[in-house]
Length: 94
Image 1 (cartoon, rainbow, N blue to C red):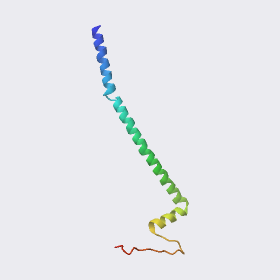
Image 2 (tube, rainbow, N blue to C red; image 1 turned 60 degrees about the vertical axis):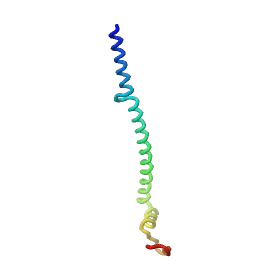
Image 3 (spheres, rainbow, N blue to C red; image 1 turned 30 degrees about the horizontal axis):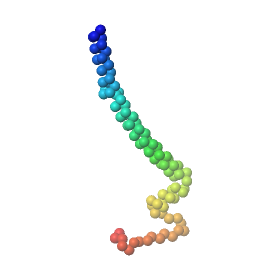
Image 4 (cartoon, rainbow, N blue to C red; image 1 turned 45 degrees about the vertical axis):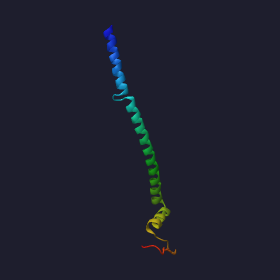
């Protein structure tokens, strides 16, 4: 009877060790949950960025307004009939 008790206590200690320290332990599970949470935040940011890029692509494919805006801001182009004025700072070394 005493040997069975010792065997059961040893078995219980072994299970407790695995629960607290071993593979699949509570510490490991909580670390993985934290990692999942941070990855979900990253994914949410990427989803928002993708929506913005998708709307830009749609605008560029379907409308001239987006193309005109890009040409004006990035390339400095002006429409026909418009007058371009450039103000130069006197203190500028360029």
